[in-house]
Length: 226
Length: 226
Image 1: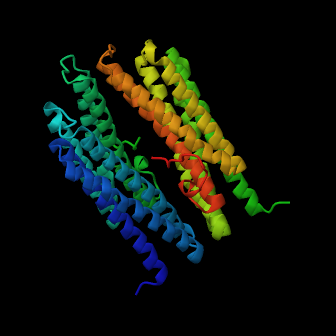
Image 2: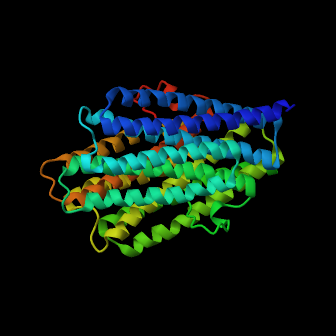
Image 3: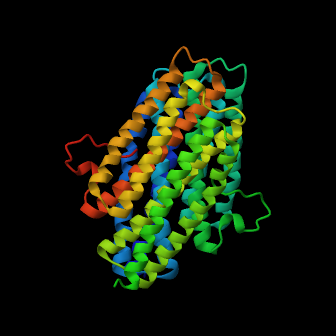
Protein backbone atom coordinates (compact mmCIF):
# COMPACT_ATOMS: atom_id res chain seq x y z
CA UNK A 1 0.00 0.00 0.00
CA UNK A 2 1.13 3.48 -0.79
CA UNK A 3 1.41 6.03 1.98
CA UNK A 4 -0.57 9.28 2.07
CA UNK A 5 2.36 11.23 0.77
CA UNK A 6 2.75 9.18 -2.40
CA UNK A 7 -1.01 9.11 -2.83
CA UNK A 8 -1.00 12.91 -2.83
CA UNK A 9 1.88 12.99 -5.29
CA UNK A 10 0.07 10.52 -7.56
CA UNK A 11 -3.12 12.53 -7.39
CA UNK A 12 -1.23 15.64 -8.59
CA UNK A 13 0.05 13.59 -11.54
CA UNK A 14 -3.49 12.42 -12.27
CA UNK A 15 -4.74 16.02 -12.29
CA UNK A 16 -2.03 16.94 -14.80
CA UNK A 17 -3.12 14.06 -17.05
CA UNK A 18 -6.73 15.18 -16.72
CA UNK A 19 -5.79 18.77 -17.61
CA UNK A 20 -3.83 17.60 -20.67
CA UNK A 21 -6.73 15.44 -21.85
CA UNK A 22 -9.20 18.30 -21.35
CA UNK A 23 -7.15 20.89 -23.25
CA UNK A 24 -6.32 18.42 -26.05
CA UNK A 25 -10.01 17.72 -26.51
CA UNK A 26 -10.79 21.45 -26.28
CA UNK A 27 -8.35 22.23 -29.09
CA UNK A 28 -9.87 19.48 -31.25
CA UNK A 29 -13.38 20.84 -30.67
CA UNK A 30 -12.26 24.45 -31.16
CA UNK A 31 -10.80 23.49 -34.54
CA UNK A 32 -14.07 21.85 -35.59
CA UNK A 33 -15.99 24.93 -34.41
CA UNK A 34 -13.63 27.14 -36.41
CA UNK A 35 -13.84 25.18 -39.65
CA UNK A 36 -17.58 24.42 -39.46
CA UNK A 37 -18.53 27.84 -38.03
CA UNK A 38 -20.31 25.96 -35.21
CA UNK A 39 -21.33 28.57 -32.63
CA UNK A 40 -22.62 26.15 -30.00
CA UNK A 41 -19.45 24.09 -30.10
CA UNK A 42 -17.34 27.26 -29.88
CA UNK A 43 -19.29 28.41 -26.83
CA UNK A 44 -18.95 25.06 -25.12
CA UNK A 45 -15.16 25.26 -25.54
CA UNK A 46 -15.09 28.81 -24.16
CA UNK A 47 -17.20 27.84 -21.12
CA UNK A 48 -15.31 24.58 -20.64
CA UNK A 49 -12.02 26.38 -20.06
CA UNK A 50 -13.20 27.30 -16.56
CA UNK A 51 -12.88 23.64 -15.59
CA UNK A 52 -9.21 23.70 -16.64
CA UNK A 53 -8.61 26.87 -14.62
CA UNK A 54 -10.30 25.29 -11.59
CA UNK A 55 -8.16 22.17 -11.93
CA UNK A 56 -5.02 24.30 -12.04
CA UNK A 57 -5.95 26.31 -8.96
CA UNK A 58 -6.82 23.13 -7.10
CA UNK A 59 -3.57 21.46 -8.18
CA UNK A 60 -1.56 24.47 -7.06
CA UNK A 61 -3.24 24.47 -3.64
CA UNK A 62 -2.59 20.76 -3.16
CA UNK A 63 1.03 21.05 -4.33
CA UNK A 64 1.71 23.85 -1.86
CA UNK A 65 0.00 21.91 0.96
CA UNK A 66 2.12 18.88 0.09
CA UNK A 67 5.31 20.97 0.19
CA UNK A 68 4.31 22.44 3.56
CA UNK A 69 3.20 19.21 5.23
CA UNK A 70 5.57 16.64 3.77
CA UNK A 71 8.59 18.80 3.01
CA UNK A 72 9.89 16.56 0.24
CA UNK A 73 13.52 16.74 -0.84
CA UNK A 74 15.56 15.65 -3.88
CA UNK A 75 13.55 14.02 -6.66
CA UNK A 76 10.18 14.29 -4.92
CA UNK A 77 10.66 18.02 -4.42
CA UNK A 78 11.61 18.38 -8.07
CA UNK A 79 8.46 16.49 -9.11
CA UNK A 80 6.21 18.83 -7.16
CA UNK A 81 7.90 21.99 -8.45
CA UNK A 82 7.86 20.65 -12.01
CA UNK A 83 4.17 19.79 -11.66
CA UNK A 84 3.46 23.42 -10.85
CA UNK A 85 5.27 24.49 -14.02
CA UNK A 86 3.48 21.89 -16.11
CA UNK A 87 0.09 22.94 -14.77
CA UNK A 88 0.88 26.51 -15.90
CA UNK A 89 1.76 25.19 -19.40
CA UNK A 90 -1.51 23.26 -19.55
CA UNK A 91 -3.62 26.13 -18.22
CA UNK A 92 -2.15 28.36 -20.93
CA UNK A 93 -2.83 25.68 -23.56
CA UNK A 94 -6.47 25.78 -22.48
CA UNK A 95 -6.46 29.56 -23.04
CA UNK A 96 -5.13 29.02 -26.56
CA UNK A 97 -7.92 26.54 -27.38
CA UNK A 98 -10.34 29.15 -26.02
CA UNK A 99 -8.78 31.80 -28.30
CA UNK A 100 -9.42 29.57 -31.34
CA UNK A 101 -13.02 29.07 -30.19
CA UNK A 102 -13.44 32.82 -29.65
CA UNK A 103 -12.28 33.45 -33.21
CA UNK A 104 -14.88 30.95 -34.43
CA UNK A 105 -17.54 32.80 -32.43
CA UNK A 106 -16.38 36.23 -33.64
CA UNK A 107 -16.74 35.36 -37.33
CA UNK A 108 -19.93 33.28 -37.00
CA UNK A 109 -21.92 32.56 -39.21
CA UNK A 110 -18.86 32.70 -41.49
CA UNK A 111 -15.83 30.50 -40.94
CA UNK A 112 -12.77 32.59 -40.00
CA UNK A 113 -10.67 30.34 -42.25
CA UNK A 114 -11.04 30.50 -46.05
CA UNK A 115 -11.87 27.23 -47.83
CA UNK A 116 -8.43 26.76 -49.42
CA UNK A 117 -6.80 26.73 -45.95
CA UNK A 118 -9.27 24.36 -44.26
CA UNK A 119 -7.06 21.33 -44.93
CA UNK A 120 -3.96 22.99 -43.43
CA UNK A 121 -5.81 24.28 -40.35
CA UNK A 122 -7.44 20.87 -39.91
CA UNK A 123 -3.99 19.27 -39.99
CA UNK A 124 -2.67 21.77 -37.45
CA UNK A 125 -5.66 21.21 -35.18
CA UNK A 126 -5.37 17.42 -35.38
CA UNK A 127 -1.63 17.51 -34.83
CA UNK A 128 -2.11 19.83 -31.83
CA UNK A 129 -4.61 17.38 -30.38
CA UNK A 130 -2.30 14.39 -30.98
CA UNK A 131 0.64 16.24 -29.40
CA UNK A 132 -1.41 16.94 -26.28
CA UNK A 133 -2.72 13.35 -26.14
CA UNK A 134 0.88 12.12 -26.27
CA UNK A 135 1.79 14.69 -23.62
CA UNK A 136 -0.93 13.23 -21.36
CA UNK A 137 0.49 9.73 -21.96
CA UNK A 138 4.02 10.91 -21.23
CA UNK A 139 2.90 12.44 -17.91
CA UNK A 140 1.07 9.22 -17.08
CA UNK A 141 3.71 6.68 -18.20
CA UNK A 142 6.98 8.70 -17.89
CA UNK A 143 7.92 7.15 -21.25
CA UNK A 144 11.03 9.04 -22.40
CA UNK A 145 10.97 7.64 -25.96
CA UNK A 146 7.39 8.80 -26.38
CA UNK A 147 8.34 12.19 -24.95
CA UNK A 148 11.08 12.58 -27.55
CA UNK A 149 8.55 11.88 -30.33
CA UNK A 150 6.91 15.17 -29.45
CA UNK A 151 9.92 17.09 -30.72
CA UNK A 152 9.52 15.47 -34.14
CA UNK A 153 5.78 16.15 -34.09
CA UNK A 154 6.57 19.75 -33.24
CA UNK A 155 8.81 19.98 -36.32
CA UNK A 156 5.77 18.89 -38.34
CA UNK A 157 3.77 21.69 -36.66
CA UNK A 158 6.48 24.19 -37.60
CA UNK A 159 6.29 22.98 -41.24
CA UNK A 160 2.53 23.43 -41.28
CA UNK A 161 2.95 26.87 -39.76
CA UNK A 162 5.45 27.81 -42.48
CA UNK A 163 3.05 26.47 -45.13
CA UNK A 164 0.29 28.66 -43.69
CA UNK A 165 2.56 31.70 -43.84
CA UNK A 166 3.52 30.93 -47.43
CA UNK A 167 -0.17 30.95 -48.36
CA UNK A 168 -0.54 34.32 -46.67
CA UNK A 169 2.48 35.74 -48.48
CA UNK A 170 1.41 34.36 -51.86
CA UNK A 171 0.64 37.12 -54.38
CA UNK A 172 -2.56 35.29 -55.23
CA UNK A 173 -3.99 35.82 -51.70
CA UNK A 174 -7.54 37.02 -52.37
CA UNK A 175 -9.08 36.86 -48.91
CA UNK A 176 -8.35 40.33 -47.65
CA UNK A 177 -6.62 41.68 -44.57
CA UNK A 178 -9.16 40.65 -41.92
CA UNK A 179 -8.84 37.00 -42.88
CA UNK A 180 -5.04 37.32 -43.08
CA UNK A 181 -5.03 38.65 -39.51
CA UNK A 182 -7.33 35.84 -38.32
CA UNK A 183 -5.19 33.18 -39.99
CA UNK A 184 -1.98 34.70 -38.59
CA UNK A 185 -3.35 34.60 -35.04
CA UNK A 186 -4.74 31.10 -35.50
CA UNK A 187 -1.42 29.81 -36.73
CA UNK A 188 0.27 31.30 -33.70
CA UNK A 189 -2.27 29.72 -31.30
CA UNK A 190 -1.61 26.23 -32.70
CA UNK A 191 2.14 26.72 -32.69
CA UNK A 192 2.19 27.92 -29.08
CA UNK A 193 -0.18 25.12 -28.02
CA UNK A 194 2.27 22.60 -29.49
CA UNK A 195 5.19 24.35 -27.74
CA UNK A 196 3.46 23.95 -24.38
CA UNK A 197 2.85 20.24 -25.01
CA UNK A 198 6.52 19.78 -25.93
CA UNK A 199 7.60 21.79 -22.92
CA UNK A 200 5.58 19.52 -20.57
CA UNK A 201 6.97 16.38 -22.18
CA UNK A 202 10.52 17.73 -21.91
CA UNK A 203 10.01 18.44 -18.23
CA UNK A 204 9.10 14.77 -17.74
CA UNK A 205 12.27 13.77 -19.64
CA UNK A 206 14.32 15.97 -17.31
CA UNK A 207 12.69 14.47 -14.21
CA UNK A 208 13.33 10.91 -15.39
CA UNK A 209 16.82 11.25 -16.91
CA UNK A 210 18.23 14.37 -15.25
CA UNK A 211 19.08 15.58 -18.74
CA UNK A 212 17.33 18.10 -20.95
CA UNK A 213 15.65 16.58 -24.01
CA UNK A 214 18.01 18.32 -26.42
CA UNK A 215 21.07 16.86 -24.63
CA UNK A 216 20.04 13.23 -25.19
CA UNK A 217 21.73 11.52 -28.12
CA UNK A 218 18.69 10.03 -29.77
CA UNK A 219 19.93 9.80 -33.36
CA UNK A 220 16.83 11.73 -34.38
CA UNK A 221 16.70 15.45 -35.03
CA UNK A 222 15.48 17.03 -31.83
CA UNK A 223 14.81 20.70 -31.38
CA UNK A 224 13.86 22.38 -28.13
CA UNK A 225 10.54 24.15 -27.77
CA UNK A 226 10.66 27.84 -28.50
CA UNK B 1 21.28 40.96 10.98
CA UNK B 2 19.34 38.76 8.65
CA UNK B 3 19.88 35.00 8.74
CA UNK B 4 21.03 32.94 5.77
CA UNK B 5 17.51 31.85 5.02
CA UNK B 6 16.16 35.35 4.63
CA UNK B 7 19.26 36.39 2.73
CA UNK B 8 18.56 33.62 0.23
CA UNK B 9 14.92 34.64 -0.03
CA UNK B 10 15.93 38.27 -0.58
CA UNK B 11 18.43 37.28 -3.23
CA UNK B 12 15.67 35.46 -5.16
CA UNK B 13 13.60 38.65 -5.02
CA UNK B 14 16.60 40.64 -6.27
CA UNK B 15 17.01 38.26 -9.22
CA UNK B 16 13.35 38.75 -10.13
CA UNK B 17 13.83 42.52 -10.08
CA UNK B 18 16.94 42.15 -12.25
CA UNK B 19 15.05 39.95 -14.72
CA UNK B 20 12.18 42.46 -14.91
CA UNK B 21 14.60 45.35 -15.51
CA UNK B 22 16.45 43.39 -18.20
CA UNK B 23 13.33 42.38 -20.14
CA UNK B 24 11.81 45.86 -19.81
CA UNK B 25 14.96 47.36 -21.29
CA UNK B 26 15.06 44.62 -23.96
CA UNK B 27 11.51 45.48 -25.08
CA UNK B 28 12.40 49.18 -25.25
CA UNK B 29 15.47 48.46 -27.37
CA UNK B 30 13.61 45.94 -29.54
CA UNK B 31 10.99 48.61 -30.29
CA UNK B 32 13.68 51.10 -31.30
CA UNK B 33 15.33 48.43 -33.49
CA UNK B 34 11.97 47.69 -35.10
CA UNK B 35 11.06 51.31 -35.86
CA UNK B 36 14.56 52.41 -36.92
CA UNK B 37 15.40 49.14 -38.74
CA UNK B 38 18.55 48.99 -36.60
CA UNK B 39 20.11 45.57 -37.21
CA UNK B 40 22.87 45.83 -34.60
CA UNK B 41 20.45 46.83 -31.88
CA UNK B 42 18.11 43.98 -32.90
CA UNK B 43 20.96 41.48 -32.69
CA UNK B 44 22.06 42.75 -29.29
CA UNK B 45 18.51 42.17 -27.97
CA UNK B 46 18.42 38.66 -29.46
CA UNK B 47 21.79 37.75 -27.93
CA UNK B 48 20.96 39.47 -24.64
CA UNK B 49 18.01 37.17 -24.01
CA UNK B 50 20.44 34.41 -23.01
CA UNK B 51 21.26 36.38 -19.88
CA UNK B 52 17.56 36.34 -18.91
CA UNK B 53 17.36 32.60 -19.52
CA UNK B 54 20.50 32.06 -17.40
CA UNK B 55 19.03 34.16 -14.59
CA UNK B 56 15.86 32.11 -14.67
CA UNK B 57 17.67 28.78 -14.54
CA UNK B 58 19.85 30.03 -11.71
CA UNK B 59 16.84 31.37 -9.80
CA UNK B 60 15.02 28.07 -10.21
CA UNK B 61 18.01 26.12 -8.88
CA UNK B 62 18.34 28.40 -5.87
CA UNK B 63 14.61 28.29 -5.15
CA UNK B 64 14.60 24.50 -5.18
CA UNK B 65 17.71 24.37 -2.97
CA UNK B 66 16.02 26.75 -0.56
CA UNK B 67 12.89 24.58 -0.45
CA UNK B 68 14.99 21.48 0.17
CA UNK B 69 17.32 22.95 2.80
CA UNK B 70 15.07 25.33 4.68
CA UNK B 71 11.68 23.71 4.16
CA UNK B 72 9.73 26.93 4.54
CA UNK B 73 6.03 26.85 5.40
CA UNK B 74 3.10 29.26 5.19
CA UNK B 75 3.90 32.67 3.69
CA UNK B 76 7.57 31.93 3.05
CA UNK B 77 6.70 28.80 1.10
CA UNK B 78 4.17 30.76 -0.90
CA UNK B 79 6.79 33.41 -1.69
CA UNK B 80 9.22 30.83 -3.08
CA UNK B 81 6.58 29.05 -5.18
CA UNK B 82 5.25 32.39 -6.46
CA UNK B 83 8.80 33.47 -7.34
CA UNK B 84 9.12 30.41 -9.56
CA UNK B 85 5.92 31.39 -11.38
CA UNK B 86 7.03 34.99 -11.73
CA UNK B 87 10.40 33.96 -13.12
CA UNK B 88 8.56 31.96 -15.80
CA UNK B 89 6.47 35.06 -16.65
CA UNK B 90 9.61 37.17 -16.93
CA UNK B 91 11.53 34.60 -18.97
CA UNK B 92 8.62 34.48 -21.40
CA UNK B 93 8.53 38.29 -21.54
CA UNK B 94 12.18 38.17 -22.59
CA UNK B 95 11.22 35.79 -25.42
CA UNK B 96 8.58 38.26 -26.58
CA UNK B 97 11.12 41.12 -26.69
CA UNK B 98 13.37 38.76 -28.68
CA UNK B 99 10.49 38.06 -31.10
CA UNK B 100 10.10 41.80 -31.75
CA UNK B 101 13.86 42.07 -32.35
CA UNK B 102 13.77 39.06 -34.69
CA UNK B 103 11.05 40.73 -36.72
CA UNK B 104 13.24 43.85 -36.97
CA UNK B 105 16.12 41.65 -38.20
CA UNK B 106 13.92 39.75 -40.65
CA UNK B 107 12.74 42.89 -42.46
CA UNK B 108 16.06 44.78 -42.33
CA UNK B 109 16.94 47.11 -44.09
CA UNK B 110 13.23 47.96 -44.17
CA UNK B 111 11.23 48.64 -41.03
CA UNK B 112 8.59 45.94 -40.46
CA UNK B 113 6.17 48.68 -39.40
CA UNK B 114 4.76 51.13 -41.97
CA UNK B 115 5.28 54.83 -41.25
CA UNK B 116 1.66 55.59 -40.38
CA UNK B 117 1.79 53.03 -37.54
CA UNK B 118 5.14 54.10 -36.06
CA UNK B 119 3.47 56.34 -33.46
CA UNK B 120 1.12 53.57 -32.27
CA UNK B 121 3.87 50.95 -32.09
CA UNK B 122 6.14 53.43 -30.30
CA UNK B 123 3.37 54.02 -27.75
CA UNK B 124 2.89 50.28 -27.28
CA UNK B 125 6.64 49.74 -26.88
CA UNK B 126 6.99 52.57 -24.37
CA UNK B 127 3.94 51.45 -22.42
CA UNK B 128 5.28 47.87 -22.35
CA UNK B 129 8.57 49.16 -20.98
CA UNK B 130 6.83 51.31 -18.34
CA UNK B 131 4.62 48.40 -17.30
CA UNK B 132 7.68 46.20 -16.79
CA UNK B 133 9.55 48.97 -14.93
CA UNK B 134 6.56 49.28 -12.57
CA UNK B 135 6.48 45.51 -12.27
CA UNK B 136 10.13 45.58 -11.15
CA UNK B 137 9.28 48.26 -8.58
CA UNK B 138 6.30 46.27 -7.34
CA UNK B 139 8.47 43.18 -6.84
CA UNK B 140 11.03 45.30 -5.04
CA UNK B 141 8.70 47.39 -2.86
CA UNK B 142 5.60 45.14 -2.54
CA UNK B 143 3.57 48.32 -3.12
CA UNK B 144 -0.01 47.12 -3.67
CA UNK B 145 -1.29 50.49 -4.92
CA UNK B 146 1.44 50.59 -7.54
CA UNK B 147 0.62 47.00 -8.49
CA UNK B 148 -3.01 47.94 -9.09
CA UNK B 149 -1.90 50.73 -11.43
CA UNK B 150 -0.69 48.06 -13.82
CA UNK B 151 -4.25 46.94 -14.50
CA UNK B 152 -5.13 50.45 -15.66
CA UNK B 153 -1.95 50.60 -17.76
CA UNK B 154 -2.93 47.27 -19.27
CA UNK B 155 -6.31 48.73 -20.27
CA UNK B 156 -4.35 51.41 -22.15
CA UNK B 157 -2.37 48.64 -23.86
CA UNK B 158 -5.62 46.95 -24.87
CA UNK B 159 -6.86 50.25 -26.34
CA UNK B 160 -3.66 50.63 -28.36
CA UNK B 161 -4.01 47.04 -29.52
CA UNK B 162 -7.57 47.70 -30.65
CA UNK B 163 -6.40 50.87 -32.44
CA UNK B 164 -3.76 48.82 -34.26
CA UNK B 165 -6.38 46.29 -35.34
CA UNK B 166 -8.69 49.05 -36.55
CA UNK B 167 -5.87 50.32 -38.80
CA UNK B 168 -5.41 46.82 -40.17
CA UNK B 169 -9.13 46.41 -40.84
CA UNK B 170 -9.46 49.86 -42.44
CA UNK B 171 -10.41 49.68 -46.11
CA UNK B 172 -7.66 52.15 -46.85
CA UNK B 173 -4.91 49.70 -45.72
CA UNK B 174 -2.32 49.92 -48.52
CA UNK B 175 0.60 48.04 -47.01
CA UNK B 176 -0.13 44.54 -48.21
CA UNK B 177 -0.52 41.21 -46.47
CA UNK B 178 3.08 40.67 -45.33
CA UNK B 179 3.04 43.90 -43.36
CA UNK B 180 -0.43 43.11 -41.99
CA UNK B 181 0.92 39.78 -40.71
CA UNK B 182 3.98 41.46 -39.17
CA UNK B 183 1.85 44.10 -37.46
CA UNK B 184 -0.61 41.47 -36.18
CA UNK B 185 2.19 39.45 -34.58
CA UNK B 186 3.86 42.55 -33.18
CA UNK B 187 0.64 43.71 -31.58
CA UNK B 188 0.24 40.31 -29.98
CA UNK B 189 3.83 40.36 -28.64
CA UNK B 190 3.28 43.71 -26.88
CA UNK B 191 -0.10 42.65 -25.52
CA UNK B 192 1.26 39.37 -24.11
CA UNK B 193 4.31 41.16 -22.68
CA UNK B 194 1.97 43.52 -20.81
CA UNK B 195 -0.11 40.55 -19.61
CA UNK B 196 2.98 38.94 -18.08
CA UNK B 197 3.92 42.18 -16.29
CA UNK B 198 0.37 42.45 -14.90
CA UNK B 199 0.40 38.79 -13.92
CA UNK B 200 3.63 39.27 -11.91
CA UNK B 201 2.28 42.37 -10.19
CA UNK B 202 -0.95 40.55 -9.34
CA UNK B 203 1.00 37.71 -7.80
CA UNK B 204 2.69 40.23 -5.49
CA UNK B 205 -0.75 41.62 -4.56
CA UNK B 206 -1.90 38.12 -3.70
CA UNK B 207 1.18 37.47 -1.57
CA UNK B 208 0.75 40.72 0.35
CA UNK B 209 -3.04 40.84 0.78
CA UNK B 210 -4.11 37.22 0.33
CA UNK B 211 -6.64 38.49 -2.18
CA UNK B 212 -6.57 38.42 -5.96
CA UNK B 213 -6.17 41.86 -7.55
CA UNK B 214 -9.64 41.76 -9.12
CA UNK B 215 -11.25 41.11 -5.71
CA UNK B 216 -9.93 44.31 -4.12
CA UNK B 217 -12.38 47.19 -4.04
CA UNK B 218 -10.19 49.93 -5.44
CA UNK B 219 -12.84 52.19 -6.91
CA UNK B 220 -10.96 52.00 -10.19
CA UNK B 221 -11.85 49.70 -13.08
CA UNK B 222 -9.61 46.67 -12.68
CA UNK B 223 -9.48 43.83 -15.12
CA UNK B 224 -7.52 40.63 -14.64
CA UNK B 225 -4.73 39.68 -17.04
CA UNK B 226 -5.82 37.50 -19.91
